[in-house]
Length: 138
Image (cartoon, rainbow, N blue to C red; front, top):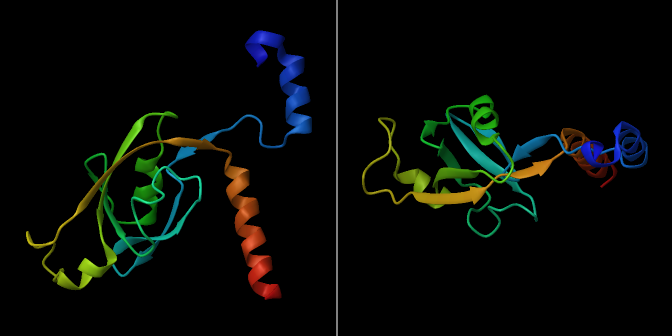
């Protein structure tokens, strides 16, 4: 907008729309640590992963990089908007087949390739705050 209409237009948009400009990228998943693996705990309804992965599934890799913690997930899920992210996911029901030495060849993993989407980090902060208040009231 700024390059087309000038800096003043960008300032006006920021005042009227607090999420302008959109700053972050991701695939619309929220994760948490489950023992030593990263588990999907929320799938946004507008996520490109919606219908391809399920709650409880485990994210093992993103773009060929091992995911060992939430920080790894956040680091590797970010990228240019519209760029492809390749996730290797282990279905939740297969987790019991994994022993302590690692993933057995018999476990069927899912490869999901999706485009990264754009969001503003404050959107997530406000949504998480809304969820906390909603849980407190319920």
